Length: 179
Image (cartoon, rainbow, N blue to C red; front, side, top):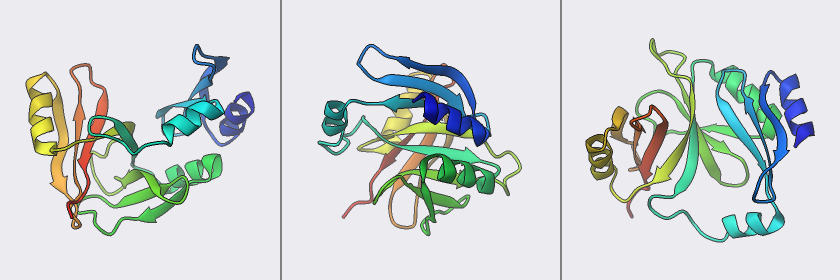
């Protein structure tokens, strides 16, 4: 983990918290990417990795992640060099250009390219699977959350929204296309 953090520093990241053991037998380090987004690096045990991969995300569970950036080329270059990620354009995007992020054989995240948007945001956020995005958005707002974007649907039927909780923590909700 310390070697990973040092390698990321050479790519422009900054170590916020050095690698240290955690209570669950994993090792964690916190870094910021060159755009200022905070990331936590986690080294899991083999049992934890097997358990995590055993099932598909259920509604309400963490399912993916998204990055928003005003410098898509620099962001892609950093994550491709840092973690070997692959970025592919998503033809279903209806607003800002969107890229599916592949950390393996299937997409596990996404990136918005806000370089052509005057008030484009820089962020890294978790996304959660929802059964009904508009209903979940309404519930979040009634509990003090705020909508930053959406709900919106891609051309192939994925529905998503970006929100903040009452403390300003950004998160996303999505439902998979039906059928």
